[in-house]
Length: 253
Image (cartoon, rainbow, N blue to C red; front, top):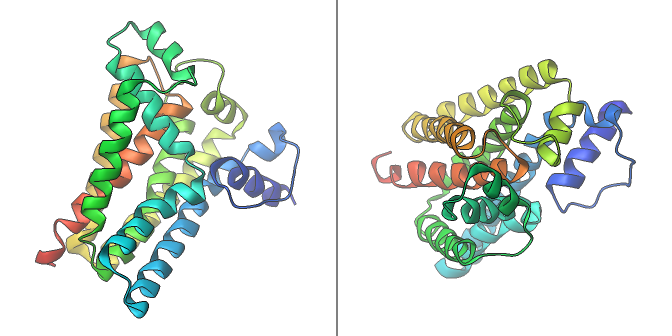
């Protein structure tokens, strides 16, 4: 029951998939991050099924691409996209660290958030429109990989402030066990994509790890640590980077 409640908490926060109502406590948040990659597994399965359905039904390229771009947003509820936009606004403000942290909490979308949102969807649509079935299979696994790395960061990297979702989950988590679990999950994802196709899998894994390290460096320099919004920023950028790494190399596979 303890593990089930931890999974329910993870899915309740990080997805729009209907879940039973449970009261959040330190007990059922202790291992919730371990189940974060399972949300990515669900997204990956739906993406793969959409790819198969689009091919079987002869769905056109534009509608097929729209499905690939929107499925992760619909299942996640846009929580990570919100982090991308808030972080983009804060980074574009060129303000001191304290002011950047205030901008992260601001519920209003600034001009830079709108620009980044449009650019992100355009970039995602452009690359997913070129996706072959073999690339979709690899990238379906990458949705779990990005969440494993994001959760690992919450358990490992310093938080920029004592409040917020990242700080709450970081403080409530059994960090040592969660780090081990998430590292194993990330390693399993990397092994899976390399096993399926090393020509696409290695660039995908490299893109994920490099993005993680660069976002960690950015978070420490610009904000003094991570927040939930920054981890959402990382996840979205990571998934886009992996898509480009895989799909741009598919013709050489």
